[in-house]
Length: 466
Ligand SMILES: NC(=O)c1ccc[n+]([C@@H]2O[C@H](COP(=O)([O-])OP(=O)(O)OC[C@H]3O[C@@H](n4cnc5c(N)ncnc54)[C@H](O)[C@@H]3O)[C@@H](O)[C@H]2O)c1
Image (cartoon, rainbow, N blue to C red; front, side, top):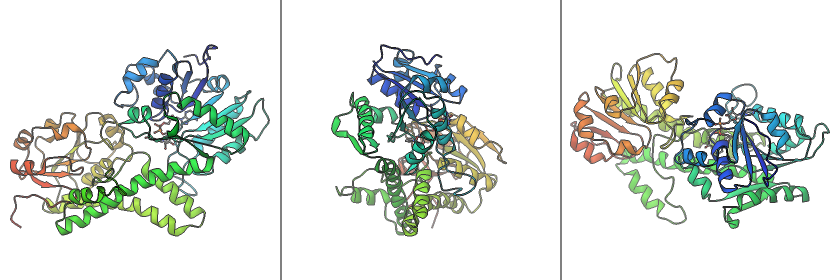
């Protein structure tokens, strides 16, 4: 696929990184700015081929339709990274920034190798002025490193580095991109920086109300993304910590969350107790924040944020221990069905999904594990490949649950709310258990049918004498 710009287009935009962020974000820009030419490049040729096919590499509600409207018109996917850099003067960088797994900062800091390679590639292939925009989530002050690399040898042009972190949530990415709470654009407070920032404001203002486009200094922008994810995850860990107390005291976490969330200073969102948060971002971004705090000598601040991740791990382990103790202290040889493997509903993404941890732990307990999910079975097979034990994958939830001793609900997919649980119950081994890790089922109805029901943060409903 060629990346040559069309002279008639008002702006030519490149995005490096065709992942969960790069693909949908650029498709939205192409849709809202039909006179711009938008090219998305990636080193992963298979991913690019999938973006150019009828079977897109990621599942998001509304994405297929959006891509079909703009692909080949003013949205192009290509592996020609060098050509893309040469031909475009506005370059979004949306490569992955996972947690470092080696050396200094292993397990905490961001692994910036993909990011730095991209910076060097931009430098090598640029002969004109470029605006380089950090779309990836990065530690505060990364733009400084980017500027230093880009300015390390003279070439034909000058570089302006901006920060424009992405706040979309997987599962509602298209809706979020179309109607964002805010768009954040950070720049150096210089004349050049402000002018570069204005050209990015111009793109978003095609469809985002101007008062929702916030401009800040570049460090505030970089830091705001980390802090935003830390606050979201902190709310989940806060209610999950309270769910443990509810289980000891016969309080009901949903009732507590409702009472707390109706305080307008607190708000009702992100107060659903669950088996824990997953996704590629929350844990990695908080650990990144923790690492930064430690780097700057702020150990108390680091400890505070690290506890959010610790509670998440605690909640997942607590879930498994609850299964073991409720099922007569042994899972060995029992067949357990996991409803949902994606880290949340409406995505096939399983990165850091609690279901991975739970499945591994159940296998360690020598349970037989059956995984069911409408969109994430391919990823589940990759995540669990090579593990010892009996593992089965069934998309159909009725087939998956048949013959099982227990169901563990891991993802809040609507299909699991709407199943015929009389039918599910009939086909299961008895006594049959449901552990609802998302609190989405009708617990009294499941109990009435005959299940022993264990929600999160609520008294269990069992048919056993206490
Ligand atoms: N996934 C989300 O919901 C989300 C939301 C907001 C922000 N973010 C952030 O956005 C960034 C990207 O996340 P993602 O989920 O899209 O990641 P991803 O892994 O889905 O996609 C990243 C892509 O970058 C490509 N890549 C890596 N190095 C490259 C290089 N040198 N040249 C060209 N391509 C290269 C990879 O092949 C991959 O396809 C991360 O920093 C993430 O923290 C993610």
